Image (spheres, rainbow, N blue to C red):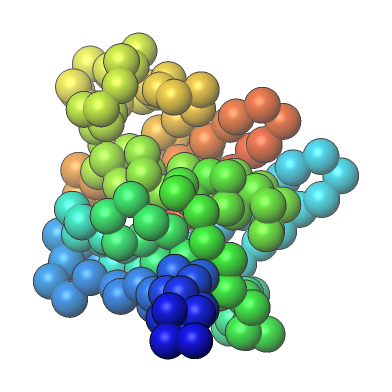
Length: 174
């Protein structure tokens, strides 16, 4: 009887998901707008993103400020919580956001791309302008076009990937 209870407790523990925590100390924090077009669907909204090497927290809301999703990455695990409190888990943000939001969000590569550099984890093709700033890069199947810079930081980006077009307008860096 004790073994059966112990086994049941172990199974129950293994099935529970640990709440992922957003990073406490961040490398950067940004505010902006996001627009995504995928197939016949489209989404526009606001984004508030806190990034650190080991994790991320991204809040996506409607233009009126109503929450849509909270994405938390801690190491190799990613959790998305919808406005109605449903939680989804995956090993990467792209498959998770595609499954839950309908479009892929490349959180892992995006942290480098918003800083105007390719990710060091995979090969990239880059095109630089005469000023040395990136005009475009292709990496991990994504094409990133840098449309505007402000104070030497990307301010407007267009990202495309297999039928997905996403625009990111960064309004504030912290």
